[in-house]
Image 1 (cartoon, helix red, strand yellow):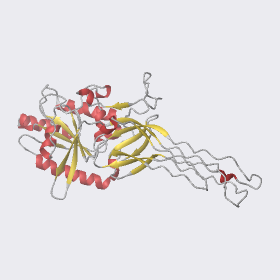
Image 2: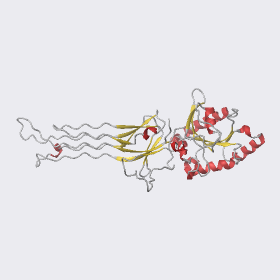
Image 3: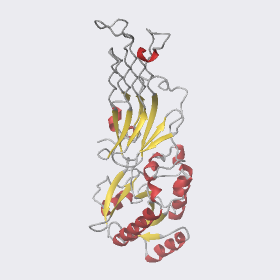
Image 4: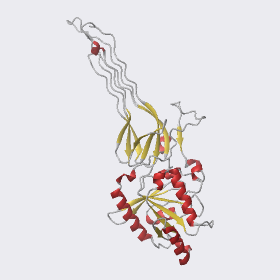
Length: 375
């Protein structure tokens, strides 16, 4: 299954039904008077959090959603049927924005949550409501109120407790494959990971936490270098970040300099993300001598807690899982809102290029598949 984490869709709620202009025509009842019923209410468009979805790929094949209009009023003061609700199922963790200005309309963080994104129009009044002492046979009725229409931008931001960040080939995918049942693609070249991966880490029979592995970052990711920093949206909701550093980078770069590079990219993406608690994790410790590893640890300790592991030999893995589980437990208990999306994160909503011909055309479509363009 392809992974799609951002789409633009068009929604329109149903128009209200028109009120009826009819008169009572019954034997032996002269001047029966007006009997036009009210129109039915148009259908609402409702977003529903579905725990069984983990991608927005379904919206590649359908981007327009229109609810039915309400039935018109009928004679004998009968009200038209109201239109059914149109449910749109989205993955849990999806952030919904108004594409016109980027305003956050809803953050879906729980399974089964429902949100009326567009209310249906109210049905019009029939002519029975316009009867008066001076107007015994009114020939007027209200038309139904029009529904609401808008373009939405859906941004999927995965729900995870721990996010793995770092340079390409820092060992993120290897780590998640060791501590969980996830099996991401692992190879000895940069940007092996093109889409985020989730893994469930079992601490014991009663406790577990979820880890998110995202593609690597490099200097200049904010300008689109590498895969850019758009995948950082998938660690926004994490309570804890694990910053992985290769003890012996293949390009001979300094791990401490790499640390500052990634931290700068986090700050450029979102100051709130850069302020999240983190652990510094030195990977591939078996490649460094004991003295060199000790000196590197000492240089990084002033910047936070440092752990050292080797995913190949298993050194430090068990202690790391226990440490992470303890910190996640504490953070979730003290700051329960850490799962919320960051309000200062960058977004494509509200950005309309001059050559964008789809902005005002409800029949035009736009689906953003960043991962697909890399294939």
